[in-house]
Image (cartoon, rainbow, N blue to C red):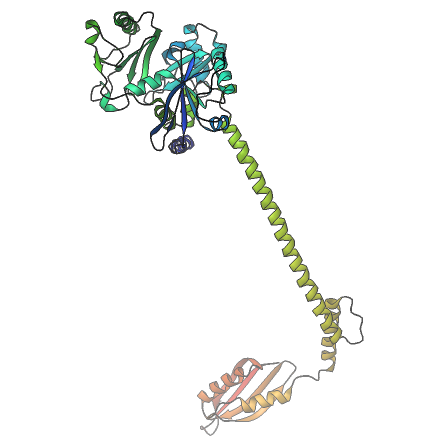
Length: 467
């Protein structure tokens, strides 16, 4: 759950970064109405241009963009509502995210005039009620035909969304234009009609709950009003709660029977190009994918191409990093080799000087053998303890003001024993510390200390180790 939340948050942040330009297209009467806007500046670059994609006759290309520029601009295509089947469904609580599309297809299959295998589905989930979804279904064959025409004109839609979302955004762009109760839970309605189509929408909390669209058979307002009333009666028959009043477009001329349930739009219609970007930029990747008819093999391949390009760049950078590491390791090893060669040369020089007349093959081993030989010779040539050094320390170590008379000195291979007389016990401790400070006498102990027969001097006896 935490990872999904972070992913959706990242997608919304990324979606808020507006591209420089965006194209928006609507299909009407066999033509593509194409417009361009700058989402970052919120300005319309050029209004809707009717583009014929039938291929009949020779006509100049009205799109003020080159083919290469068109391929690099994101395109939002709105599929006409009169070519769409829609329904509001409730999914079983046991349906998982992976099973959602299959469950929606099974529930809406009976509503479709074509097989479910030839259908493309888009859906929007209620954020407060995840089991409630509004589903749109279109013919796969019909969409593929239009995609082929668009590709021939250098246009590749990144999203194909239901046009009813654009109509709802145009007539209900903000809370100030919604005929709703303060709690924002009562339904709102939109009636949009022109010379060849009638569209009625019901929404709750900004999400479509019911819609119906029909071709207009006659241009008379009375005929349009009768078709609109038929749509509203169909909504009531399906159990939908109708709002007290509907927003209507300026092209609808209500009859007295219709005037009581309609209210004029207080703001002008939103430009389709800006509305198209607003519909896809504020959603996460999963929500945008669910709301678009482009799924599976028809999904926009730009993300894959961008990922592949990113992987190629990453592979190149990784190769460059590996080459850099190899070169750095080679330089480092070369420096170590030079240092080892210099150390071997210095060691050979020292060994040749220490071992004159010897052939130097293994300097470390030869020097180690020579050192062991000298140690053995030192042991053989040693004449025992250094009595002279011991006598020197015993005579020079006492500090000034402390004097003693040596009575006897016994020196063995490792130990020595000295006895003497001094003036006080304090002088005995001073002598002991002075002898230890020489560094050649260790582990000194005072074996005895006491007053002499004259009761004026102190006799002592010390024993310790010597070098």
